[in-house]
Image (tube, rainbow, N blue to C red; front, side, top):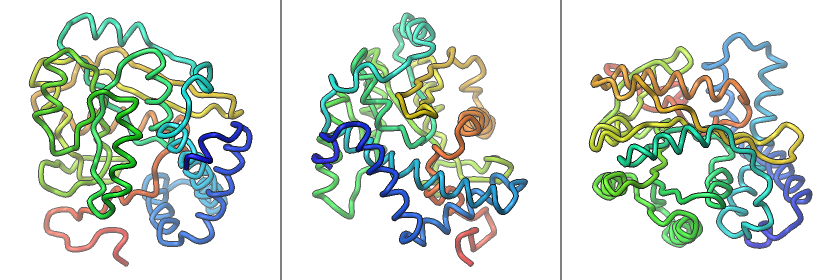
Length: 284
């Protein structure tokens, strides 16, 4: 990853596409997950459109892996001018309330690169999920992220994240992965009921922190990145966990539709079965 982070950007893109090509052909389990997710979420695609989107998704994820290497090991000065920021005035307006700001957004494949690029203009704190199965990789991931984010909180460290907001920090949280039924509600995601975690609304309610939706994309010509900050959400948190889940999922769906291939479709988004059911779509 260190070697990849120090290649010329044009070579990094080619290497990422090649990794995506290999993954598409050899990571058959993940390809199946991707195919199931896309059939569930985009049922109107023709078979050819579906195949093309699966291929593009793997290509985007391959480039995303190289972007992780860049974010954890690369030199910021090399990439400083590659980001076009939209809505920074929305972020500053939210910060002016002095209650901290909660950034909520999806796991787009540019996730790590967006944080890396934002660190060139501001201070960001983040949440993450520890890799309990591989302590060496977990330490590498933590150190790579910690050089960008002064505050880095494991997803179970709720108190730490809340203290960050209490101190007026900018906290980034992505609520679009399936962590099981506990602390989740089942609400629609692209028309399918999905276990949706509710910690985001708890974070926001704790300190009355404004919530800004955060999205980020690789430009279609691969010349850089578009990073967006929405105005503070007026209807979130609503006081109702299910409604909050619906609100955030609608925002996430809209963000994904802009660049469907740049979403992390390789994750088992629907792995937690609905109450009363024993199997999920990936079981058969």
